[in-house]
Image (cartoon, rainbow, N blue to C red):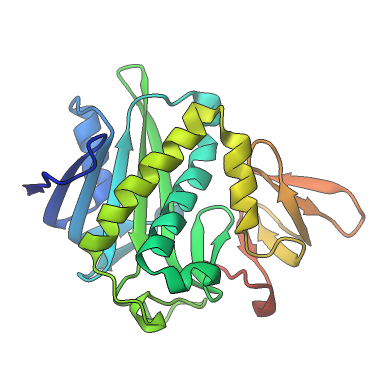
Length: 258
């Protein structure tokens, strides 16, 4: 384990050669009394996880990072953090590889796309520790390679001509995330976050399918409501507010499952 003396002054940074999961490490430290903001970064993960408990081995060359937050986390606003973090990741990639900026899109609720293919994902996890809310934002960014054999388009930064090391990207990400969290301001600035997220959103105005736990809906992706829920215009004309679901869409719409 290494401590980075050049880390952003507002957040400590711990780096590891190998961890099971950066998010699991962050949560473990929170349960032991660690205070955030704290970044946990690993060169390799052996038990990385995604939505619905999916697990995979994460080899070196990509960025695997988790941010532990323990302050300024009002429960009513915690669902907004996935949009805050997504913007922070987008900002960092656009700064590290400016020529990719116009090609980056945000996929509801927690993925980032490059030319319509997934290259980064976010997982927000939270729990109560000693009667206080603790949140960990897990971030995976494909810098040098991407998985094969998955049922949706994926890519990495190197494949698009951007040679960015995980360490260089992490330095940019720390500052970008600090700025986005300050803008969010524990929820009081979510209107601005929401507007900026929508300006980079994939599939707005297009036809999509949304898979819920018990059914699947089709319609047009109209907007996000004030809480960050996806507003789906159904064929009958009524709006359905989606809190949790998976988005699917035709390839030309720029939104893909993942």
